[in-house]
Amino acid sequence: MQISASTALWFLPFALPICMYVAWSDLKAMRIPNYSVVALTAVFAVIGLVALPFDAYLWRYVHLIVALFAGILLNAGGAMGAGDAKFIAAAAPFVAIGDLLHVTAIFSGCLLAGWITHRIAKYSPIRKMTPDWESWEKTKDFPMGFPLGATLVAYLAIGAFG
Image 1 (cartoon, helix red, strand yellow):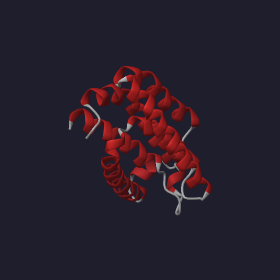
Image 2 (image 1 turned 135 degrees about the vertical axis):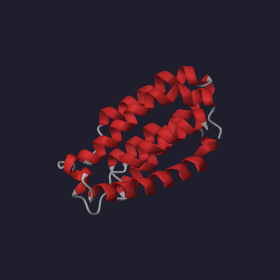
Image 3 (image 1 turned 180 degrees about the vertical axis):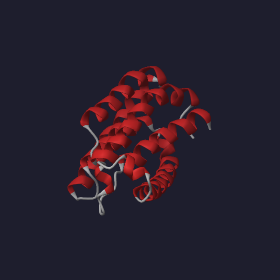
Image 4 (image 1 turned 120 degrees about the horizontal axis):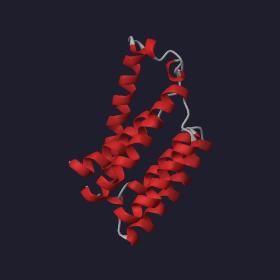
């Protein structure tokens, strides 16, 4: 992977709690709050100055713009929720462009694992502990913040420790 262990180690402890919150919020209420997306962007803006060479830091904002534009188009076409599109845009600068294939593979695994875990939990005693979660009742929609957050955390953890 192209992300350095140092860069991943800088980002991971700050991105982890935000990604956990995004997953929880999307599971509970089927929404990713704007302030969590702003917080993730702020982490990149501040920590990126220390974690990346300045030219790479500036170029990573192109990732954000491209991902946001693609997300807006996909949202307009009904292919994804607005919160998912905004989260992907906020997470995009954390990813080295050469790691897109790795991130796609990580996301595929996280999506499959997240969907299976959600479905098992939905029909298990876990559901009784969280009866008010909106995601239990959805049959067509899936809380994508769960696998999206897991993807960013897994990518950074693999970069840091893998």
